[in-house]
Image 1 (cartoon, one colour):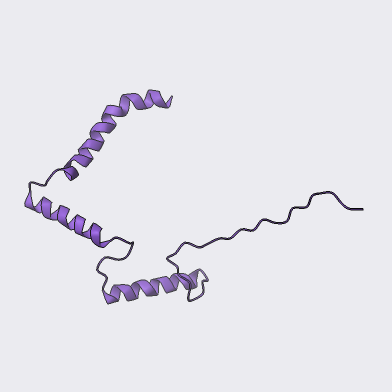
Image 2 (tube, rainbow, N blue to C red):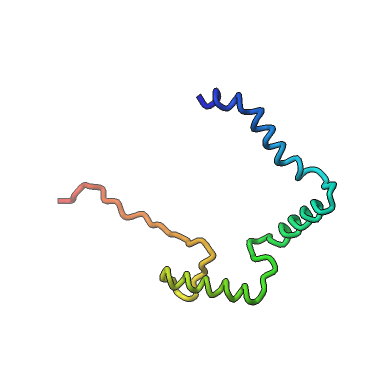
Length: 102
């Protein structure tokens, strides 16, 4: 069933993907377009590591206050890192064999 729906649409999918990817693979002929592509690449190189790009002290202060507000809203202690994923530990409960000793 899926094959019957997918096979006729492969040319459309291929054309759409080529249409989206082709401009990014080509060299820009327009200077404004080239400037735009250069800025996107510069932003990509600066944003490695998941940190803010060129933050000002005011933005850092606002970010810290928002994280503290979320921590108090969700009942976390003041030293909790709200940007990291919580770590869970699960322990298996003891299993009773079901046979009673009489």
